[in-house]
Image (cartoon, rainbow, N blue to C red):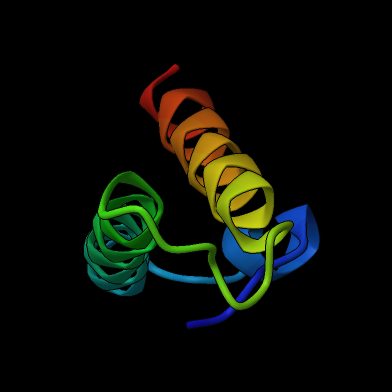
Length: 66
């Protein structure tokens, strides 16, 4: 799993963006599953970082649509 800066995302093509978004969503589901199963995540800030990266990707996708 990678946390990207906005410039890195803007340099990706559509296929790379779609692939990374799918990976991040899978990672987010897995991290949240650990928390809801009663355990504590290994890295508590990881959920926040994943959500921010997903938001960045969605922002770039919307920018490209305009």
